[in-house]
Length: 314
Image (cartoon, rainbow, N blue to C red; front, side, top):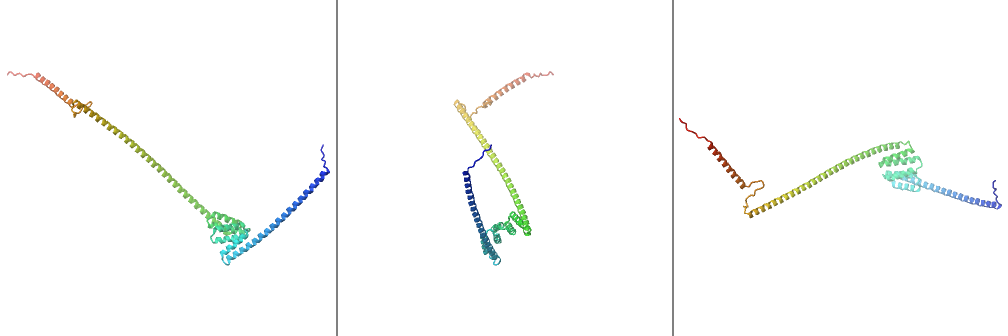
């Protein structure tokens, strides 16, 4: 079974009272919003009127600047008039374009670039945009910024594709861009070759330095070896001298000993395995004596063995 909801009369009356208050608040809020909307519209209307008035004043200054240029050829006054026109309304693209022409003719390319760019963004008609971007491309051509010039001429042709002068400038900009890129590539290749040559020279120099260093090290090692050999020879020489000195001391000691024993000092002492002169003399005398004895025996044999001849009896 469903439970029925009972609403008392008191609660019903209270609900109606709350509904009336909400409706009243909603009505007040709606009125306030309406007044705010009307106020904004009024302000917008006043703002539009002020903008329209400023734009008209800006156009007047633009005409004044044109007159200074065409009739009086007064560049300074024309520039001042265009500046006043721009200060009155930023939407005046023609004043910015004309001021850009003044700077372009005076070779002030930085100022001309800024004004042409502002004119291209501020202009409404395609014709005005076309002129602004065409001249912007001319500024880039003067500065040899051919890539940017190509983009500017393309933007000009997007607004008026049939302009032959812009088409010619675009083709020229492309040709100059290609030539510039080729020159840059050639310069990069030359720089790369120079860098490679420099690297080879540096490598050769490094190798030569290594060889020189190795030769120096070999020379130093050779000198060290020679010094060591010299030191060794010196040591050997010193040892030899020491030995000679020791031998001399020994001989002197022997001479002193012989002197004490009564032997003649000047007589040379026999060396090991070597006969003294006296010993040689004794041997020779002994040999002579032996030879005499042998000769005497031989002679004796000859006399004894010789037959005596007898006289023949005739």
